[in-house]
Image 1 (cartoon, helix red, strand yellow):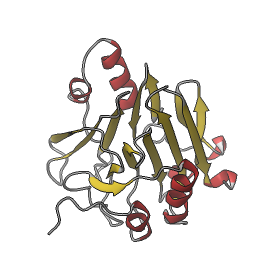
Image 2: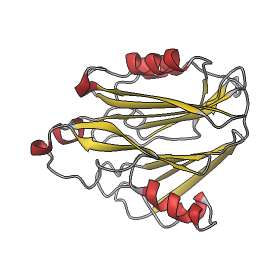
Image 3: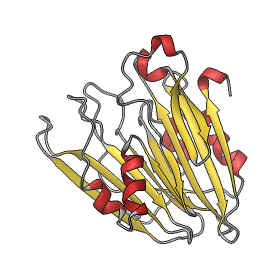
Image 4: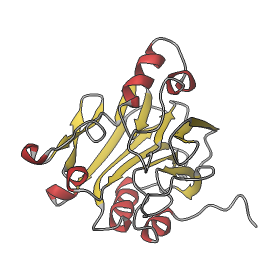
Length: 238
């Protein structure tokens, strides 16, 4: 068993109809750029009625058709926010919790100890979060239910150094199901790509066409801090 194997992200996505929401953080093979990607998928009409919209400090989710928005509590949030030259990426409103704690000089871990998984039993969707630092190091976290009843929360934190060509992929679910099985184990080791357009297109093309909703990808120059980003929205035909 090769515990240091680096898998192809596109293959992982192509072989999984429902990883749910996913975060990828890493470093390009040439070592020049940090990489951040976040995608959302959905099965219900309410969940699928969303697009990513740019904000001055990142992106937010927005109802594509406001008239069809049934419950905004778990689907409308600010998934990506910058803080200095750092980048916060999450699958919920814990983005703002993390931002507030970091602004006060506290840590991602301290922020997430105030939160837990989503109250959507029986799925108990995990809260996944990432923090990409200016030097290329990054952290990932998952908060998930300790049992089928949602009676307690387990909190898992992972801290990674910058390694050229390597990224880590964390997603909410193992695969589709009812209830949907929560992600297990450590974030998955995946290969990065020097070209942002190719990387973004590969993710979008390999997400299940029935369930994919939106994708955000950002490449940041480690030396200058300059960044480029790309957004795909199914509703906009991108």
